[in-house]
Image (cartoon, rainbow, N blue to C red; front, side):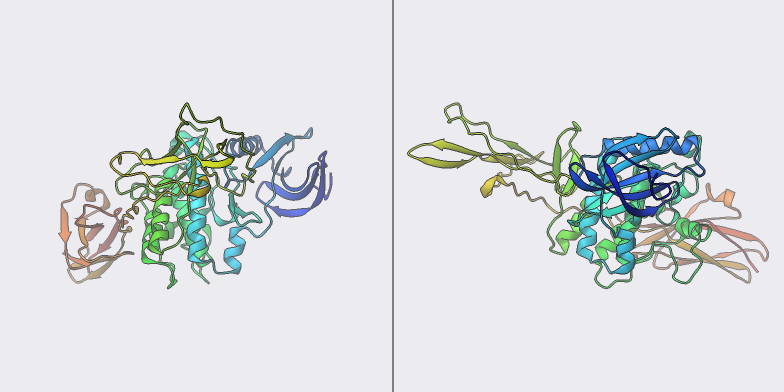
Length: 483
């Protein structure tokens, strides 16, 4: 052993420690052939249990399954040692990670949008493989020397499901976790990962987690009630567009049903903000339906679903065309560059050497009436699509109650209020009565007074509604006794 706990690994030379986590240490090694730096994650011996060892092995398997994605940290190999230990050899990303960067500097909106789309690509790819990350946070996003993010630490990844379907606790990082996970209603699913991704992007813009209060009590037990009941705060940055504020609040909605359905849907919302700000659109890199071919998705039009997307195929050469000469291979670092689609260049001999560019056809599913755009030079394909619609879901309202003589007044507030919003209130003598209580519609006011006998209890719960039919999650129940 080297440095106390760093293993002596054949073909690798120990350099220095990189960091330490709950159940593993990470070290920098230099691989001898071919010579390159690698990060080695080593399982700690202290407190080692069979569950931790299995979790460590599962992490290696999961990351290896997703290793080809450009925004997921690549695992080269995994070994178990004779004394019961284990280690992973991974691609090395130099510090700082995104948590360290966000603490030290103010990340620009353009970079956060681009990073969000790239991470959503990685998360969507994992979800299509049936894998839920369950621990997305800034510290688990590394950055390559070329500035590309790498999602790591799949140690508690799983297949999702409800809490009653699992037989052991799953550790989570509270500040970025969805309320249904924190309170045991779910063991994590696609929409809880969407929540964590939204919380991560909010953190990158502000430099702290969404419900952290500077100078306040930010322990897990103080954060959990805020995450469950407090509306998502705005970033407070003048350069953050309102559309991005609303999208992040949508991603971090208290109710899973009020969030984007998929990471891909969130990515398309981020692309819509890019276009609104006249920024270059960052491509979404996911696997196609076969799970074999990498494709680069641009946002679909209004009402399009995952299957309605732009595709690219090369036109077959006519029979009389001269046979093409073999093209030289294009070499790219798959861990730092997203897959690209390019056309071929055919060389023929006709009164000397003449370069012929093979045309490609770009068509959108369900839009056969549109003319395909011409193929640009050098065989690259430029595709445009109509802007995605960002649905402005109202956030869960926070409700308060004030006792008065012979009455209780309920009032509420929420992020992203719009003109025309109205409210649906349920009122009862107890929490149990609210489920069957008659709904009262309140317009042009954000408070409601209920007459009650002195000393009697009144409970209420409110929902924000819009004329489009969109509604917010219900507020927490609030009860108060009249004076």
